[in-house]
Image (cartoon, rainbow over all chains, first blue to last red; front, side, top):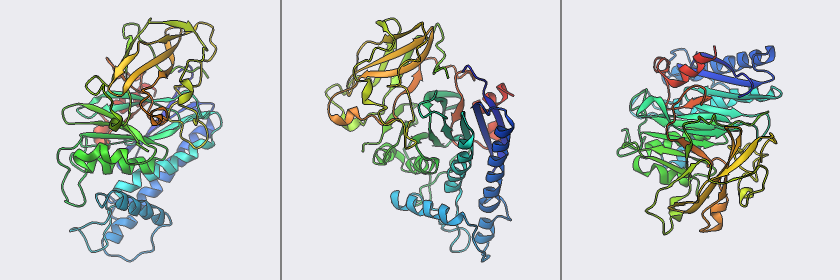
Amino acid sequence: MSEPTWRAVEQIMGLPVSIALRGRHAGSAAGNAAWAAVVADLRTVDRAFSTYRTDSWISRHNAGELLDPPPEAAEVLALAEAARRESDGAFDVRRTGRGPVGSLDLDGVVKGWAVQRAAARLRDLDDTDSCLSGGGDLVCWTAEPDGAPWRIGIEDPLDPRGVIARLPVSRGAVATSGRVHRGDHIVDARTGRPPVGGPVSVTVVGAELAQVDIDATVAFAQGGRAVAWLRARPDHAGLVVWGDGRVETWRSAA
Amino acid sequence: MKKIVLAFAGTVSVIVLLFGYDTSTAGPMATTSQTSVISGGATTAPSGSDSSGSDSSGSDSSGNASSGSDSSGSGSTGASQSSTVTGDVAQTRWGPVQVELTLDGDTISDVSVVQYPNGNGKDQEINSYALPILVQETIDAQSSDIDMVSGATVTSVGYQQSLQSAIDQAST
């Protein structure tokens, strides 16, 4: 790039949140203020929805307290319900067997939705390209619709220090689900177990991070049917890495 | 803004493009490789030549936030020494694929697909997110080649060892 890229990192929601700006407001006062607003926005979401905080709304709800939900809850729950229906129940935020009836685990929905919402603030920066990543799920924006794309490396799930592919993305979102870093943290809600015979990593590229993040998670939970399920989803593309290291690219059939 | 997509290392002159075509359209070439390999220097043409087929993607690249890639249809930036290199036609499982690189000096500024498999009309409507997924043969994952990393959820601890961390550190 001929222009320097400005970067910053904050630990929020237990995740590293990384930002890159290039163009007029890379490092400007307005750019710094926009980043501060993004951080504040994500911390607000964390205070409401983090299951790692005992004082969050979700934790108190799951402990049986009857509280008014935060204003964003309706939107998050609507996303979760759509995902449950579209995944034939593989994705379900309703906990079973843990906590009282009505317990929720919104972790699979909140992150993508929150990063997408926060990233929208960066679009107000004139003549500035932005890329915001929440723990490896990211939103890209270029001031010009066909501006020089961000070069997104797709982490090698078998060697997290390397990349297996590189995608140019101008405007769009990229999410990857897999079992590195956190171990087997994705389970099929229908069985309560990690998927069998499935991919080690699923990357989905599309317009909205909230959606591609959920789709990557659901596809991962589909095991060996991951690519077939992804193809049936609209307006997405991406790649899947199988256990033997094979990389399979796909796009929506529709 | 200068449109430099990839630093084109002198010794690495092979790029592999993987296409996310729907495998259900697999044709008679179903046993051949799905990759298209380009090596430099096959054909050199003046820049700005409107190669056939380049209008088949990117046609909706503005508007509804769907321009995942600008790598075709956008033409060159008019730099005086830019040139295009057209790769050999590669037989893929979906049919022949040919790609064209635009070079500014020794830097790739654009990648476009000049020939798609023509099994049916759907193949022409390449989803703007699907092209191109670049898998460089000796991708060395230097921070200069990658702006941001997408990977399975990185915890704060795992981040310390991650490539994203290296990229973040490189510029601060």
